[in-house]
Length: 275
Image 1: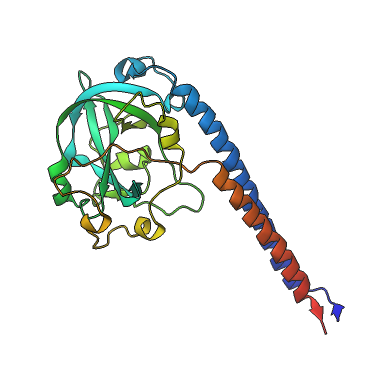
Image 2: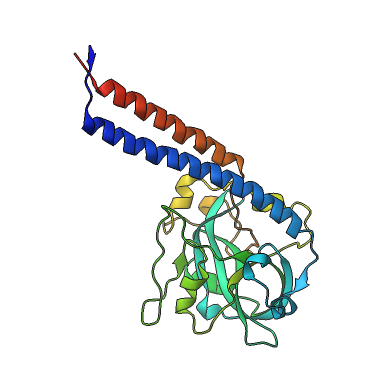
């Protein structure tokens, strides 16, 4: 056996190794970001809930408002609500319902995540029965807009003169507002069932509980009964937080990508030995 250098094999393996090491570094960065997120989350949740109207009157940087608990009242515009796909609640797959709300005494609109509806109840006709009450007094958790991440699937492109997009993968305020007849605040709210829940942070930073198959099955023929949910007359939507995986999950990906880079290096060396 003799080693014979192959530019083609070496170049291909080198490109793959660089890509895999880059992905490993990216996952490590995500790990550090999640640690920072938890620290920020715990600090912000110590602040007392404040009226949203008085908060935005201070004209703060929207990025500094994420995770603030706020209280507000207003009227929902159910005509222009839409869904977030691939969501879960207590190991059940479904969607979150996003509805614009006009804040009382103002011309200001904000998007509100009203909560979870299981598969089988997400169609426009089915969820019409859950479009109540029109007026509400609520506590909400401020969430930042969700731009598309690297390698994530694309959302449809909405806009005037284009078909109404009823389902998105993320709340990208700039994108979803293109199909609304009024401007909305540069953040959205998640409905809070208990704004003083001491375990609130642990409910936000956790892994998805929906099965992979159920989450990817976006429009299948599944019914509520298939997922063991309650009757169609249950009080949907259930208030639910859009969760994020914990920091440790990214450590596994760091090692996986690094191992694949090492494996690619070894395969590249073996392929260049000739009898």
